[in-house]
Image 1 (cartoon, rainbow, N blue to C red):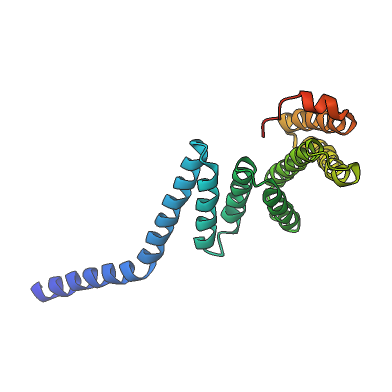
Image 2 (image 1 turned 180 degrees about the vertical axis):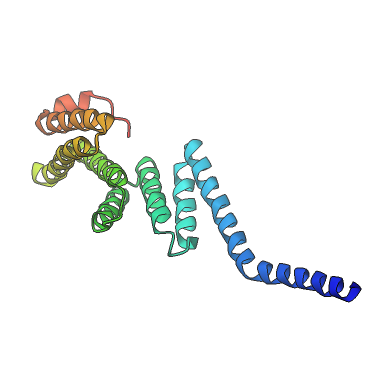
Length: 197
């Protein structure tokens, strides 16, 4: 009986060692990535945008390939931080790539697609605002605001399809703002404060 107990105890220890060096390592790695992700989100909360962008980059580099949904969510959070960190062109490019990717995925959540599209439209709106303030010619800024307008129009339709009243209201307001921005005289624009992102 004592030998059976000793052998059983050894198997428990062996199972613990196998777990530690097998699935346990993966769990420890995921916990480390979760900590990095929380650090990035804490940087966002404290409005330390540049640090948040670096931290999101680090998390995305470490995230396992099968965590596709999580990676896309983090890419969106990173793009939002980039917009606040004065990296608007990079954010816009990342958002366009992300939107193209999620639109091709039949399993992507329509609400997430709408959030990506809304953020992209906002980045185009702010790009237009800045381009106009810099005195860029209309042929440079007009495509940006037209793209934003089209996204807002499409988002209003999507909101109706998915039954999101908040998105519908916000998209309609954003659409009006984009039309006003395109029609506004430069001197009127210069008199206004920069919009909040």
